Image (cartoon, rainbow, N blue to C red):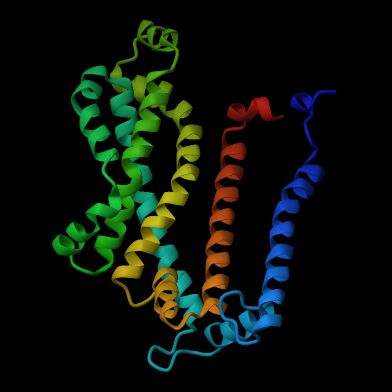
Length: 271
C-alpha cells in the first residue's frame, strides 16, 4: 500500500505525534548534560533539576508585595487578555464576514479596507496604541484584536462568498430576504470555518500578547519572561515557554473538539 493511502489509527497517531517531541527532549537533555560537563555553572541549557528549583518559588511561594502566587497570577492575567481579545475578534469576524460575504456591494466597499488593515504589521502599531490608549489593558487587548481580526474576517468572507450560488437562489425562491439568507444559509455553514479561523489565529494572538506584555505590563507570562531574561534565567524562561505551548495546544484541541461535536457534518471526510 502506498503511503498516501495509509490512514493511521488514533493510537498510532498519538504515538507518531509523540515521537518527535520525545526526540527533541532527549536531544535537549544530551546537549544540556554536555554543556554542564564542560561548565557546571552553565545557564544557557539548564538541567531539569535547575528548572524545578527555579520555578519552585514562582509556583509555591506568594509574592511579598501582591500576596499572589506569581506563576498562576501571570497565567490568569495572560489568559484573560488573550480570551477577551480572541472573543472580540471572533465576534467582529463573524458579523463582518457574514455581511461582506453575503452582500457583494458591501464587500466591494469595505473589502479593500479590510485587506489594507490585514497587511499592516500589527507590531508596528504597538507604539501608536500605547500612545493613544495608554499602557493599560485596553492597548494590549486592542493589539490582539487589530492583529488577528482582519485575517479572520478575510477567511470568513472568502468562505461565505464561495458558497454554492444554488443555495442562495433556492433560498430566494422560497421567499428569503438578504437577512434570512445571512442567518439561515450562510451562518450555519460559516461556524465550522469560524472555529478553524480561531485555531489559526491562536498563534499570532499569543505573539501579540507576549509582545505587549513584554513592553508594558507588571504581570503576565510575557512580562515574566522578559523580566528574568536580564538575569539569564533560562531555568524560568524555558518552563514558561513550555507552559505557553501547552496552553496553546490545549486551546487548539478544545476548539477542534468543539467543531467536531457541534458540526460533525463538516468533518465527514475525517470519519
